[in-house]
Length: 256
Image (cartoon, rainbow, N blue to C red):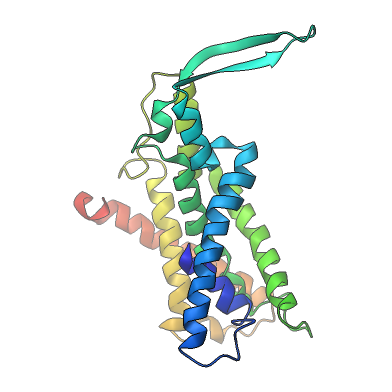
């Protein structure tokens, strides 16, 4: 999460409002700001805001539930009396070492965010926020909002196929009491390829500016957003090929 927040600070906001400070003062101050924002995203946005609607996105909510030992749904009937619904659910597994749903939700957000936040800058040249006459912090916040929309889209689209699907399966299994949990790290799990696909997409994306100096996408003469779209599709295909090869040919001990 520190890396993701640092990306927001540097790539989106251009180190605003500390861009004029000399080093190392700027780096030290931004590090402390980074830590504060990380705490805000995890313990407030995820655990206290998103957790209001979805308990499995809030580790603190799950721990509070588990401290009660069990849970059974209750509601008011037409007469206003409290009645129970369904079977009693043991909550110990919610916070077991193999579960940690709230923490895994944050990790999934970070894994997707490593790609969905910088890809607009790297592949699309900050389109559609740039070119424009927006100043900081408005330009950075506009790009943050645009990329956050794509982050939510990628999270939702991955829900049915990769690691979010496995998380949701575990929640459903717990509600049914007896079914075993899905091992997200298993070589043969449905999300194994998905996790590695996102990881390989991330690596291909960041190698574009850092290793290949924007090659081969710099050879594409199309205007934005077509240039970015072609580059994006190529990276997804390349990441899929590499991830599939890793799952198929790499030793099982290496993958785990």
